[in-house]
Length: 463
Image 1: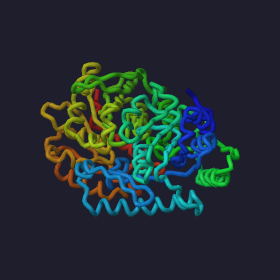
Image 2 (image 1 turned 90 degrees about the vertical axis):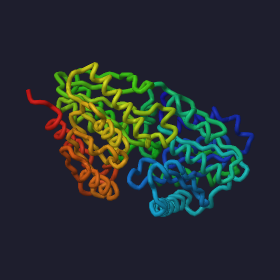
Image 3 (image 1 turned 180 degrees about the vertical axis):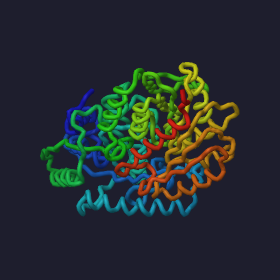
Image 4 (image 1 turned 120 degrees about the vertical axis):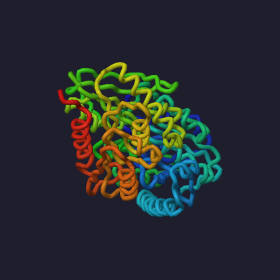
């Protein structure tokens, strides 16, 4: 199902929610992209409209991985398991929460323009977004809504991956989704117009809804919206960037196919790209909050393909496993699967294999490279957590490049300690001004260039 824009998606979603009109619901849009969709739902159901402002609490050295979320009214949802596995101290938690609380208050004031938050006490709350990628933000929003007193929580979206219902079943009383395409990779692929929603549009829609509240007067939304839903990626790395990266790959490779890999008893999905005459293949081990569809990894993969290197991007966790965020810290399991997948790849090609790991995926790559008999020619870590592979770092024999953003201070410390502990050829490169996800202009391209040069120097054998 393809939607024209968010207004169209809202109209269609409202039809699927008509059975809730008699429950006197409150409709809550997730800013920013969910608000134009929610506007149409609220109008059709003659229900009040508000925003549900949620701020994810990201692990300090791994912002894409949330250890909890906060909402208005002092609501806190914390994952004790991730706090424990992430080795977070109380000072870390307090620092992140303080910063996010300030941003939450700013957004709420900006969007509502001085109007009070609608009470959810004893009400049916319909949480609306323009789509679901990983479901992390939607799940946090539903938890916050319930903590704010909602008697019933309904999550409604136009489009989501087929396994989203399983991921969200513990946080909602009802889940409504119009389309669950099997080939799902990004929300924006299912909209003809997926342009960004500015703050001003959110403010205008909420003001219009508030003005007509109780009168039943019809309003209209522009439907021109952008999503800040999880998985949308940084500026310049959303669906358009992915499409551009895919185009570059298509021009550079002779073989580009989706594959299924049997690894440690599970079947993992992957994308294999092999340029004609490729002399090496790089396997990508992505980090938390990411997947083989990550625009960051795709940009790096495109650069490697253009240099004549093959790439295999694949998911180390199944969709059901990803629903439990603590699994990203099970480095032993991730490394075992990476090792098995390496064997699978070696059965298909005889060229040298390297690892490109990001965040917790870098720890899995280093642990796999440290295994006895590991045949890994080179490793590159982007914003990695080598400390999670700490007991085995001394056993890594493959030349290893550690890349960290200059403003990612905690991760710099972790990588400096790892560099000192490793006995193989190791280099630490710090990209000035870059943060953990390398979202700054040109930062990710520097990562791609460094990785390409490292693999060409250490992985490709001279003829």
